[in-house]
Length: 97
Image (cartoon, rainbow, N blue to C red; front, top):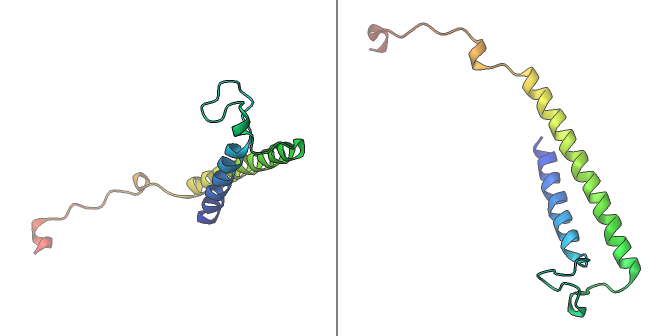
């Protein structure tokens, strides 16, 4: 489970980075907006590449979420609760000494 959690963190960081690299299509963006200083990539191919990388990373992110959910639910189903075990006998004062 820890392996998939580490992979999930790397996918999340890569997804955030790729999204931040993309050019804003909105007119009123806070950083750069639609001005020429905000255009990091001017070629249409670079924008298409970033869009495809974003889609692949998003699919990996969701797939990893589903995989971790299935793994966790099977672990929860197989585990027992402390509420299922019978209560132990109380310890008397003579047993403590």
